[in-house]
Image (cartoon, rainbow, N blue to C red; front, side, top):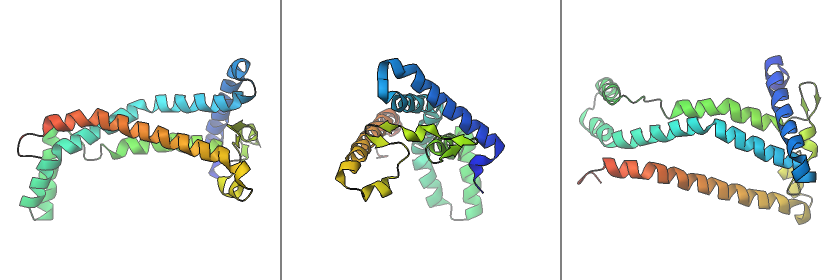
Amino acid sequence: MDLSTFPPIAVVLGGLQSLVTTLGVLVEPVAGASAAALGVVLFTLLVRLVLVPVGVSQVRAEIARRRLAPAIADLTRRITDPEARSKALMALYASEKVSPLAGCLPTLAQAPVLTAVYSLFAHAEIAGHANTLLTHTLGGAALGANLVVTLGTGFAAVWPYLVLLVLLAIVVELSRRATLRFTGPATVATTGPGQE
């Protein structure tokens, strides 16, 4: 059974497809033939903007974990009884007002959004009609194409995908560096002499 045909999910996917299509129509006077691809890029930016609070929550959770790491390591070293260690860890988390699940919850919150975005480009049919998003291209790469199948057609068809993969790698690296820059000073500030 395809979950994308389940009525509530189909309605959400249909709405997302309409949003991406509308964004493409809005930028068509500026972008011309690349309007659909630019609509996808704008939609992706909107999704990232919506997920900023989740990302901030993840960074805060990481800062809290780094701050508590020495105390957790000390408790783990000192207390050998698993039940007593668990109680001591829960007491530590409570006293520091940190949830042990703080890093997991933001990730779980992102999952439905990212799954819906992925589904827009994984299904030939959405909400009972053809998925027109798959007929457009982005930088020469067809949005509805499968990279594995395209690899068999030769370099001329594959190079746009390679360019997109390089761009994706650059975006991921920039995001990683931004996260490190954001979390770095907090960990330095909480590390005192002799705790390094």
